[in-house]
Length: 334
Image 1 (cartoon, helix red, strand yellow):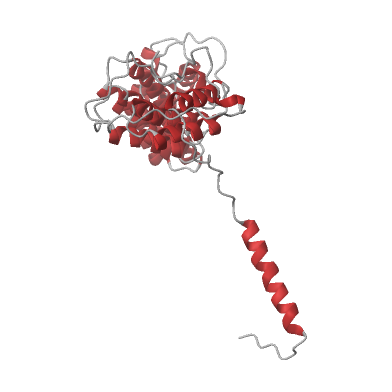
Image 2 (cartoon, rainbow, N blue to C red):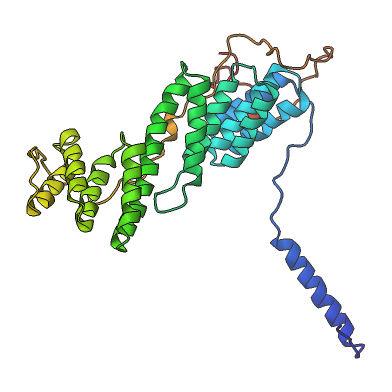
């Protein structure tokens, strides 16, 4: 325990403690400012949020769509606003919030047709978090599970079509991860562990771009272990399916140099790449929130309260809150 014996030192100690307290408070992150509550017509709030969306001002859009929910919780506009918040959070790379919004919509309106989009956007949020094969692939597995869920639930929709394309990309990513680990084991001399990884690629990800190299690595590994028949078998599979691939040309040379010349001549032209292309994200391909034919509440929603007198439109000088004459692409009822 600190004991201050000199009375002249006490004021200095108090001042020092106050300074530390102020510094500690200053180090804390400031809370996000919230819109001051002011009752406004739902059309005005939503139109302002849609205007911000068109201008790609995602944080401001989230604020106004949140106000739609807070001030008009039982309207179809509020239901729509949840999806708009999810999309705005997605566009601003705030994937955790976007997933939470999508889950909230699914929980509140599981039977609504727009639930398909909520499932889709949730899957895309995981997809956007996929990183290069040298890092942890937890998000990749979550993306694959959610994309498959979209295809299973809504097989004949545009969401399923896009999900299938993304599933192919995710599988290629997972195969790339297995190849990275397999090459590492091969360099370390752990040939059996490497073989298990390469066989996993051939068995589970045979339609990906990594299959030719995986077959070549199996030829290489089996020759190292002296398992000639296994090497010949994998070389034959590689030559039959990918006779024009540079990896088969390498396997052909390797087998021929070992006195195991394959029957199929390679037809490869050019050189194989030394590095795997990095995973690419393209948000421009993401489907926008759907429009609705007419403002009809979903059957699963709670009945709205008795209609109240419409609130008087507040007078404001803020130009952002004036509804636009043109129809925004984010308007709910296109």
